Length: 129
Figure 1: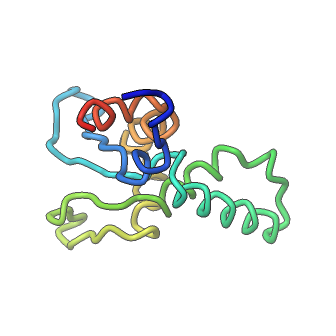
Figure 2 (figure 1 turned 180 degrees about the horizontal axis):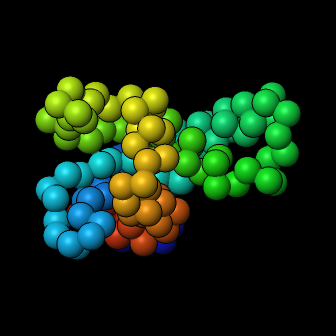
């Protein structure tokens, strides 16, 4: 594919697949989160919304970069396994549930963050097109 034909918005809008590995054992869990990448229109719109929310909360955007990225990723989470559950209860893929999971000390955010920030995560999708 020629660089002139490359459409990062389209690729990123399809989502970045992040297979979660167990944070202690390193074993694959089979759980895959799909998050719209940072070059997608969805990510950009969500980032604008989050920055506006941060300002409305009286915070300085430059002091909240990590929070902005996490909240934007939560809003941009497209799907995770329908079988996901927590404390024996179903855990549907919603921005609120995504943010809650990303804030927990469970190793998920540490795997989501680099995947959505790094364009190299789109490589598999690029090779398929």
